[in-house]
Amino acid sequence: MENEKNHIIPYKTFLYVLAGLIALTLTSVTLTQISLGAMTVTIALIIAAVKSSFVLSIFMHLKFENKMFSRAVIGVILLLSAVIAITLLDYLNR
Amino acid sequence: MNTILVTHRDDLASKTGMWLFLFTEMLLFGGLFIVYSVYRYRNPIAFHQAAHELSIIIGTINTIILLISSTTIAMSITAIQKKNKKLALLLLGTTILLGLAFLVNKYFEWGEHFKEHIYPGSAVLASRGHGDVLFYGLYFFMTGLHALHIIIGLIFILVVAVSIFREKINPENYVLLENSGLYWHLVDLIWIFLFPLFYLIT
Image (cartoon, rainbow over all chains, first blue to last red; front, side, top):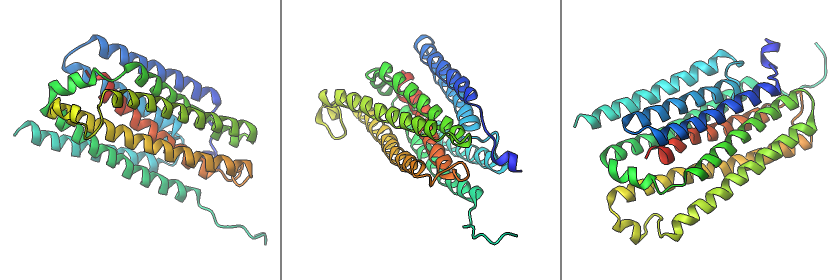
């Protein structure tokens, strides 16, 4: 328990994650400039979601914290997705 | 049991409180993203063209600035855990400078729009039609609300840095540093979605 609480993440890990995040950002910028159409939105949002999962799990320590936190975060994301999906379903079918 | 008086502390509860607050922030911005999606769906051409007027270069630079600042504040937690007060302060100082750089870029970016008479309530913007008014209304409100979060985050981090300097935050008690980090990362997370939605999807 004590070890879990004081989990020390090495500096290097953060730098690797940063490199990954910057690479994903540049990929997102490049891809959205090339590909057109409805796919652009999907690609940009998928990349944003991947970036978010890195930030949440490593920067925000969710991977190393009490499981309660990651479960709660997943719960909120599901709630938000449900609200967005239901609202859009309503609008798209009017 | 020893007889030394120890003030009661519950780090897990502190973090839980912080996370609950962050959830309300996620729902706040989530609501705004719904508004954005619906208006975008109803005004696809205006949103498409107005987004072309935003500078992808400034947007990308600001995204990278925020990502680096998130990294430095995350590393400062490692530094305090390793009892390296100097490095922790240096990393927090870097985070604050990067946050300020983000705001300076924002200032110039908004300044460019204002020069072209594009701001909420402007007659020039109103003459361009409903879709443009909605796009720029959402753009200024959402990036403005985000910038407000940056300012609050910077003040929070400054308070934390002073506490580290005075050793109120130390290798045995650094939950406030962790919470300021969580707040700063959330601000970064919101930008991760704002950036593609306003700058890239054209």
